[in-house]
Image 1 (cartoon, rainbow, N blue to C red):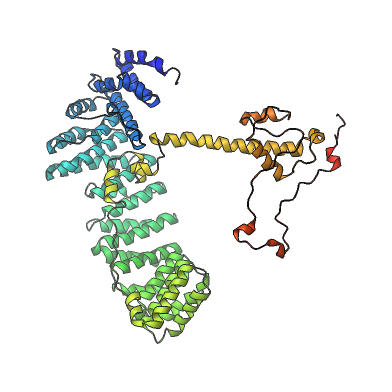
Image 2: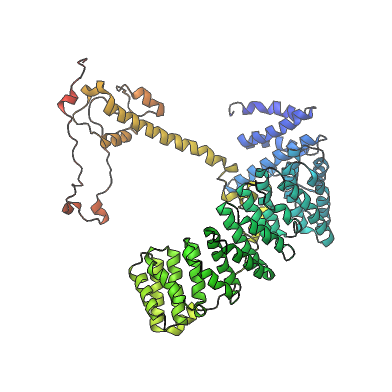
Length: 615
């Protein structure tokens, strides 16, 4: 391509002015490709300026392709500027009021992908005042009716961006109300499209929860929904939950908890707890639903319910204490570390109100060494809480747990915490009580999953991978334009590694399997791994004589030298230092072999003879 680039200028210049709009729209894309290959050629010949003039073309397809090409060129120039290259102002795609008018005129007449390109350009435009933002929103709203989901998401992106400048409350509510039906339609698409739409809806709800406040039933899970769709719907339903619809949601979640998908059941039980934390008035109803689930005696349901109840106790301390005996009765059915740690936390937190708290904790103290680290940490803290609340009856158990944690535990976190507790209890019990039994603020659910700044950035990327991953594009795209440089370099590294492995395999095969060359082996040639290592080192030294029959094959990977057919291969000048230089004890005292390099042994006489007598 580089050899014919200079010959493209004249034909491209004619095509950009051709009377056929199909030729002009194709030539517009060619300018972007030319800029990618040789930017200065596209700029010096005025092709980019011609593209900017083509935005006013009478054909909407030409306008859409010109906008696409100008956007790509602008992105390439911006990427080059971030790498230290001075950007050329001629490569910038500046959208002013005149260009805006032309884009809005062409919007309703071009193809679906042309509309996506124009809408993306409108999202980049910074309105001069509120009136202009309102005008853009009014012209973009009809795109909500389009059958293509990409067009709908691009229109939503434009509305969300320009709605920031709209101060009229009635217009804002009107735009939000019109945004709901197309989003609901996307949820009725194929599962893959559904998932992309749900990820984008999740972002939109983090910014404006009122968009779909009356559409919760749309997100109820169907029996044939894939698991990834169900999980996204659960998250959205919790975000849409309110005092008016929480009863319907709890009934639905309780039904989900009886399904066969264990992961989905656990997430459904967790969603019940999130409703209790998010909506204070629904906490008691959520607790009753959890008790009904615990009564089913299904192991994974009970364990997840215990974890959820721990969070409810943290949100509403000194409430729902009547549930504690029911939770303690489920102790024998717990085998998940998180569930065990949650129940231990509840026992320690309410140790003064549980009559047999010491007996319950003693069960975990006995199996302390076999438990997971998070269970060990919670057991240690719960026993210390029990001792501070009931010192007379917990003297023995606290001594026992501190002994085990400091002497028998291999986790530094558990040991350090045990030493801290031991020092606090032995020096100042009042300080220990102030630290261990300190009041903690109630927990709450975060309104957004990302920071406000990142959320605003992601809203400007709706319809792209960034909005699906909920991560800025630069966090998962490599260097260069759309990560192309990283992808182009990766095969080269793989090929080089493959060549080295193939070379090593061929050399090893030559040494061990080529019986016809036994008579040519030198008596000083190293064998085994030494021969392989030395051969790889020898490849760096080119030679003019290729007497080995495999040299022609190996030359595929470069001018590699396998060594002459006579004479020893050169040894590596450097090697790994002896272990003693790293402070390791001498191995000879343990009967280990000496680490000094042994001279290579001469091959047996029978191996030096020509087996077939041909030579």
